[in-house]
Amino acid sequence: MTHDPGRGRVNPSHQLHHHGIPGVAVAHYNYVEAALVDAAIARGEGRLGRGGAFLCTTGQFTGRSPKDKFVVRTPLTEGSIWWENNAAMSPDAWARLKADMLSHAQGREVFVQDLYAGADPLHRLDVRVVTELAWHSLFIRHLLRRPARDDLDSFTADWTVINLPSFKADPARHGCRTETAIALNFDEKTVLIANTAYAGENKKAVFTVLNYLLPEKGIMPMHCSANHATGNPVDAAVFFGLSGTGKTTLSASPDRTLIGDDEHGWSDRGIFNFEGGCYAKTIDLDPAAEPEIHATTHRFATVVENMVYDPETLELDFSNRGLTENTRCAYPLDAISNASATGLGGPPRHVVMLTCDAFGVLPPIARLSPAQAMYHFLSGFTSKAAGTERGITEPQPTFSTCFGAPFMPRRPEVYGKLLQAKIAKTGAACWLVNTGWTGGAYGTGRRMPIKATRALLSAALDGTLGGVEFRRDKVFGFDVPVDVPGVDAMLLDPRGTWADPAAYDAQAVRLVTMFQKNFAQYVPHIDADVRAAAIG
Image (tube, rainbow, N blue to C red; front, side, top):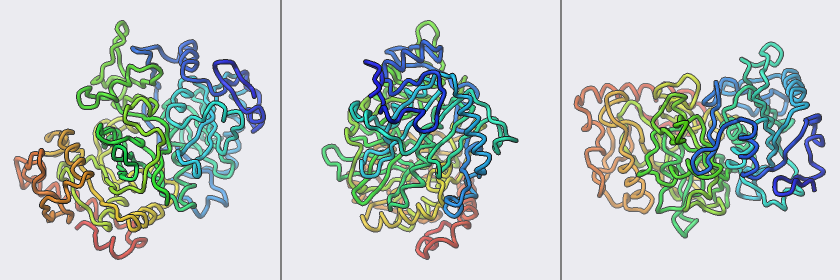
């Protein structure tokens, strides 16, 4: 065992040089949170905030850079990758990129975390993350699952992530688009990340790997949050949705136990969290609506990313978009009082699909048949939230299949059929929830009240909604509740919330047309019942 007392330890037979990363000046293995905060501050990577939170900025990149993400094209991946959605990198270009990055790392100080991706020990991935920044090591330590300290003595990695923000790629030499590259090689089980300090690339790279590997085992990887009834892990629910749709907020319900907020697998045994922490958006974070998430922003070792703060008092400005709309905080799951200690739950009884409708025409909740659920899963309609990607400054309607196209290496039908089979086997109830706009489109309407969304979800999950009257929506074909106790009935009829019903009708037709155009690509690959459930 190599052990820096009170700070780090590593399997002596699995140090960096043992798996092809030689010549670093010093490697700090598996530092705990306090040591990483100390190192990050000493290195000038940020400063200590209120309560001991770590305040940092990510420079040029304040969101993911999906156009700079590549998969190495080899005989192994040739027939299994969805190449229309995943840019290819040649093996030769990869070899040059890897060699140049390893050369760049020589003589430098790096931080190493040995972590688990996946709460189910039968299906987890053992991952080594090598970072140039101490706070990136702190971030990924929060976001993945931490082995027991003694288990580090025998840890060996299945996959390795190497993240060097100071390395600039050369498009001509490395087969990439810009000086930024996120490259995955499934043959070598390695991820390379260059020229971006945005920490989210670390976790999403691991998620992409799991999205490729798990379907081979009959496991559904999901871009979703999950919770279960208090004291009853069997009564579980999953919440699909892209960034900004409310996955983190809505799954952290005080009357249910949080399994996780972003990434899960669904096996025959049930669901399991991939992660050990949360990466929550903080823009306009309301302490009254989300007290526990708000409290993490002044908790020791929470990573507070790209938030503007008072340099004297260190008070955070939650409404300030000066650096980015995509302000974030990263913290371990145990910061949330009702979080699951195991990260496990039974097969979900409820499947919820969250959408942020910038058109303002979808109801706050609708009941879906299994075929409709498949249709909406493959469609993945939402509005990209401002700041989550480079260049997105206001909500943009989009279709992101499986509610996570940027992280889907395989064709969407692979995931769609897996989900279809899981729903058929378990009989899960399916819901579409709109957390976007009501009373008009973005710019004229208002965001759906979170209090109403929470009330409707609670009614769905506890069975109350099953006993109310529903109406069939003439435009979209799904069932919408007519009246729900504690919820303004006006909200349940989107057309009635618009001052100009004719304008609503025009917007609804516009959205239907977009659904039709988008779904045409899946028609040759799906069953007749899903085609029959198509909108329009």
